[in-house]
Length: 117
Image 1: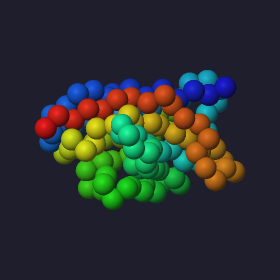
Image 2: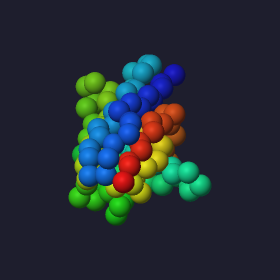
Image 3: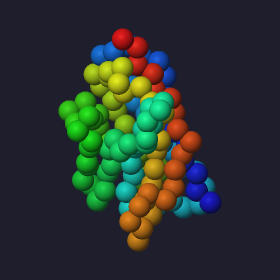
């Protein structure tokens, strides 16, 4: 069984940066796509970014500020977040989409990001 574990969250001032990491533990891991999602208090979970077949996709709110990457050899995915805003405050989740699946089917427990104004 594979588990995804996020790290790198924390408290940062507006304009600052954080780098989130996602590690896959367990049996041999291979995912068609890796993604990052977030959920702010009182709001639904929303898409942030994904990487799939070497292509990256971002929510409008993340474009130009966030960068997603993955290291298949290390079973890792990353989200570099720059120019953070208070509205970026949320619980950030890493997710993986298995080959043959159309939706993300493996999720981490999340890492909290808090941006102070």
